Image (cartoon, rainbow, N blue to C red; front, top):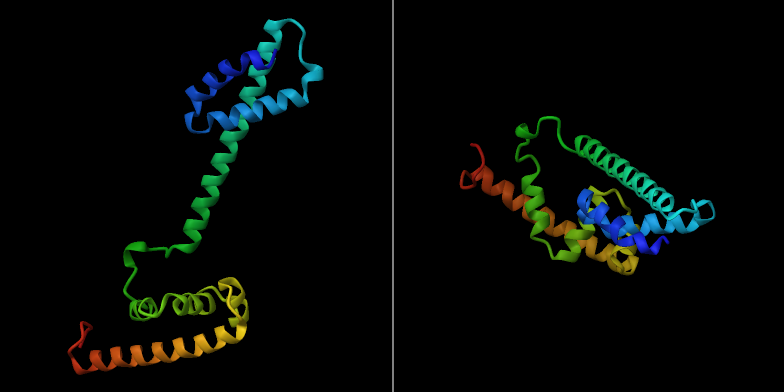
Length: 164
């Protein structure tokens, strides 16, 4: 009985949530199958029972989606500056210097300094031995130091793009 109505249930979901219709049908059919012992006997009542389940599955999916968006909005507000329009170039020279590093070294620097991992933890995340990470980290730090001191010297001599 349940399988005979699957095309109608799919059409129900396609009209309401086309992107998730197939998943919602699967969830509805699983719920109906688990609860088949309480399915009403006349076919018309069984069909209404199945659509009742479909309606509840859709309501749960909608609630989940709204919670996901609210959480994403809260996270976005927590991580963005309070006044995005006032965001300045503060730190741009450091970001640029890190971006000029070899990709593996840049990622190591970001993991350690921006994400708060230790060098050993960063090595594990990247998939390299800790000793290699320590050496790579020291080289990257030296490259950054040179790059930033060159940048500062250029700024101070008046040939850079900064304020004088």
